[in-house]
Length: 152
Image (tube, rainbow, N blue to C red; front, side, top):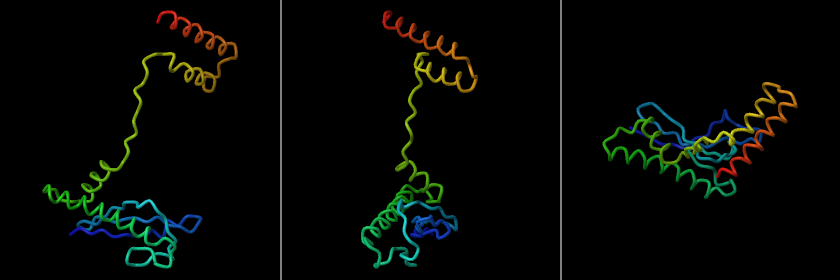
């Protein structure tokens, strides 16, 4: 049996007195937390899993919590429809595939001058080359750039 419940972590209170709100998904006594992306004061939290009506903007805040809860439930139901057991690992994988931004890694340039400035910085800071050598490296780059323009 799987359940979803909105919770706060009182042991994670920041210096402003706020704590993050999570959706806890539990399946066969295993659980996992999904961040809602909002923070709340613990005294504004009720035990049912929503913010109290006394908090300003509580309807929007509770709607956001309910939306995230429904999202996790939709993933669980989708897995069940595809005859996959909705374990915490399976739900996490589907959630991450859907919502995690995979950082795009730029393809490295094969042209050596694109890396020249980083090379010179490394030589200056790590290898501690002399100022005369730094001037020679900079002059070599200028010559190479001039040649590249002439060649094409």
